Image 1: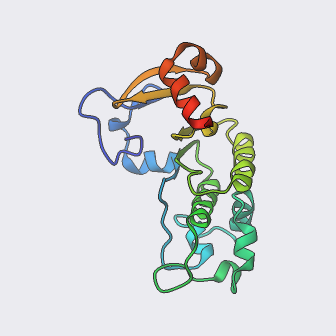
Image 2: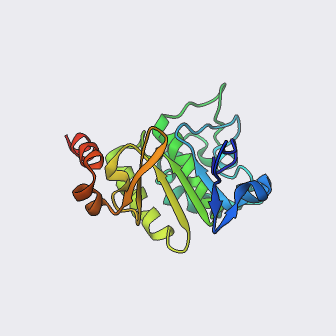
Length: 193
């Protein structure tokens, strides 16, 4: 809903008090870098897949984004590096590698709002940890929204919102919610088991 693929049937989605229905789709999408749960690659080079929407991005800018997203190492091992063609009839990447390409896209976009939907679901522990460290540094001065079922992903957030049956039922910091929310405590117990 934040990207306005759908508008709310009731109520509103607001950023800084502005109803998003009063903002053009182009402006909303310019301000948001989105890493979807199941990102895609197109039939194009690795460079072009990272630079989608930024045709003037330099090789250095694309590589810096790939380094930050922990993608540079595996890209460098591809036969043609950043010029390797991805997609249906070309090289196939793992789900974790595709997620890192999508994270590099978001880093390159450098938007004021970063929306991460189950971003680390296909990442191994080592890469996930490095990416979270990078995101912690990059989220200063911007709004970062993590949608996740893994509490380890969201526990360092400034505010955690708990959704149950499509309704926000609790909000607060991780430690507060562990004490005051039976639902959050249950999710936490399941997450660490």
